Structure formats: C-alpha cells, structure tokens
Image (cartoon, rainbow, N blue to C red; front, side, top):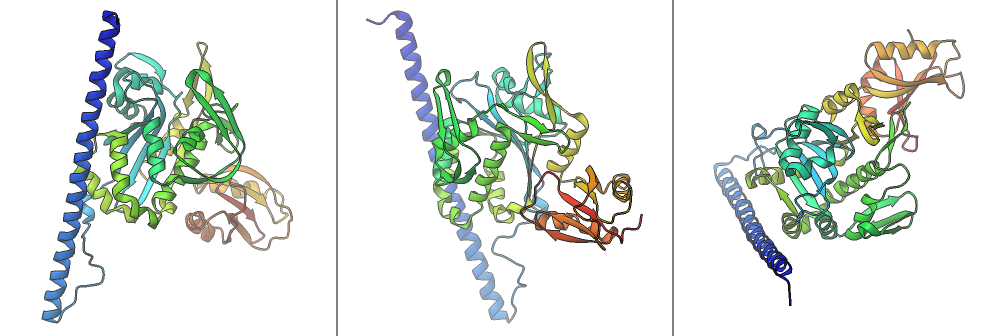
Length: 426
C-alpha cells in the first residue's frame, strides 16, 4: 500500500512522462512538416529554374553561369550569434551548464567563430546581485538568464540559444555515425556519485555517442581549464579537449556523405535540443550550409587564469585579451599574428629590433625573441603551419621582404616563426 506522499509522487512522474511524450510527438510532427516544406521549396525552385532555362533556350539566350536554382540574396543574411548550452539533464530545471559555447556564423562568407567559456568563469549576475560561476546561472533562470548574463559579460548581442543534455548529445553523435578523433592519452576515471565510468585508450578512433560523451566529460589533473604556458598563452584541460572534439564534429558534418543523413539528422537533432531559433532562420542557414568550410572556422578559449576567491576556485577572464578574442571570434576582426622572432643574420640585437618594429606597427604579437640555429640566412623567412596562416602573413612578408614557408609539422605555440635574415632593413 502506497502512502499518500508516494502516490502523489508516482502520479506526478506519470504526468511528467505523459507531457514529455506529447512534446516529442509534437516535435516529430513539426520535423516531418519541415522536411515536407523543405522538399516542396526545393522542388519549386528546381521546377522554376528548369522553366526559366526552357524559356531562355527558346529565346536564344542563356542565363549567366553564376545564377543558380536557389538565389541566396546576401542582403537577407547577417552574422548570427548562437549560444550553445550543454546541461546534465534537461528534465531537471535546476541543472547547471557543463558546456558553454558562443557561436558566430556568417552565411555570407561561410566563416564562423566559436568561443569556449569555461564553466567556472566568474561573472556578475545582476538579477541575483552577486558574483558566481557562470555554470550556476542556468539553475537560477534557465537558458534565458544564461543568454542575458553572457551578453552582459562579453558585451555581445546573442540572437538565439540551443540547449541539449548528455542524452541528446549522445544521440546526435550516433546519428552522425560517430566522430573520428585522435585520443592523446589513455583516459580512466570513475565517479560513482555521477554514475560515471570512463575507460578510453589512446589512439585514433571513431567514438560513438556514449564514448564521445565520456571523452568530453573526462577531467584530468588540469581540471576544466588551465593556463599551462602563460608565455605562449597555451591552454589545456577539459575545455581544450571539448574544443578539439567540436572541430572533429564540424569536420564530420561538412563531409559530403553527411548530406545523405540530413533528414534523419534533423529529426534526431530536433528531438535532442531545446531552441528558440525560428524555422525560417533555420531554413536560411540550411541553404547556406555549403558555404562553410573547415578553414573558415576559428576557435578560442576565453583567455584568463584560475584564482582562489573566498575558498573557491574560479576562472578569471583577462579583460583586455577577452576583448581582443571577442572582436576576432564574434566580429571577425583579425587579431595580430602571434610570433617568435629569431636572429638568423648573426647581427647583434637585430631580432629585438625586428620584434620592436612588429609590435609598434601591430603586425604581430611577439611572444619570444631568440637566436636561430644558424646565422647565415641571407633572406628573412616566415615559417607557418598552414596555408591559412600563410595568407594572413602575406602582407607582413612583403613588408619585411621575407619568404613564407609552410611546415605542417611545426610546433603550434605561435602562429609564425620569423627568422630575421641579412636583408632585413630596420
């Protein structure tokens, strides 16, 4: 015989399950309707385009090659800011955010920026009139208050939010067919309180939904985030692994084969997330998806350092560096290249003079000055790790009359290594 309290609790649980099933049923209906509308739109544009081509052939004229079946008027698009929130369990209104990402996507250029905000970041919450960790904001006021707090903290207007929990994240990865990633070291962690058991071996492998969730939740001795090399501003820890995994997910999504999974993926994603993005906006972004490429995606971690305040550890953002990173990631304003400047000419003080010049002209953020392995460089060299960085370094190379060399295996502590040759004119 159930007590009145137990009976009430059971009835409440049944009511919640019934409401959840109703919401999922509505989502499935909306998803089906969306796919039908999307198919109808594509069919309409295809038929219209074919009709126009037929008219042009009969008239003896052909449309210019740049015209396409679906015209994407760039005036209809702008850079869109979306806050992605990963929480423990979306059924629990008191859940805290485990992952916070600010995404800025520009359908006009196909470029995007992603800023990882550590969950221990210390922020001021006006509605509570207190300082607290940013991951606690969700428990106070859900995604709406989290959006407002991030806006005040970074000085950025956020258009929409997307929220999912551990179960939803796992389903999305499984829908993609898993994600391939190179696991740096063996991962073993047991937390009985959270019912968490992680055992992932090092090496390149495809992670399914459950294993991927373990990968992004794993915390080693560095914790959530740590400034492991202040001189070069290198970060590591769980947030860095999440950034690495996110890039692998984006790479998987942009693969042509993923397009075959689009109908099923949309249905899974819609069931797995809560969002305030209108369907019209989602449709526009879907039409522009083929414009985005991996080489146009920039990522960064909120710059700062850990500090203990009143017995609790927080991540304290560096205000000046944060503003630079926000301008770069959110507003696509180029940041100065980080650089090390090495003396390759054998002339005393020439590397320091070159570094001063680059700093004064705001052409590079010099992290280190030293000597090259040899002193017989007749011409200055700029060594980079990718074609993308080489393009950014082109103006600098022309100014100091240097050759640009791409070495994909170089250490990536800084964007460029500048070896000052004898042709350098200070």
